[in-house]
Length: 130
Image 1 (cartoon, one colour):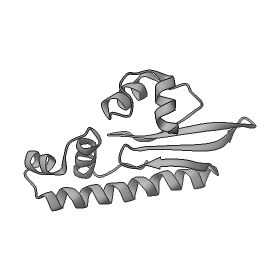
Image 2: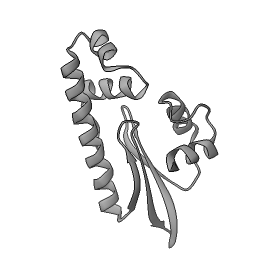
Image 3: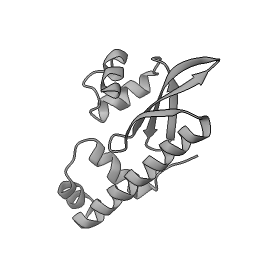
């Protein structure tokens, strides 16, 4: 299963939650350049993970946001065209969901990262699709 290295994941998560690079560097006791490199490498790895997942399952990508760790795609499930929403979850890796049924932990994750301001599935879909 794909996961970012622990230190890189920590930096990515701090940035995804809205921290500035200089504040991340200060909190972790590293240079701003080290934070910038970790973020750049994390974005590359997340893009690769999402594009690789889409390729394996023949999904058509509509949108990827590596800064917030999600992908929106179109795919087929049980003979039907469906929307696929994939998220990078710290400590767990990438998880994909079909349609609009999100478990509570995904809604909470979306609020934590500032994708939406409240754990409402319709708001999450609107935010992911826009």
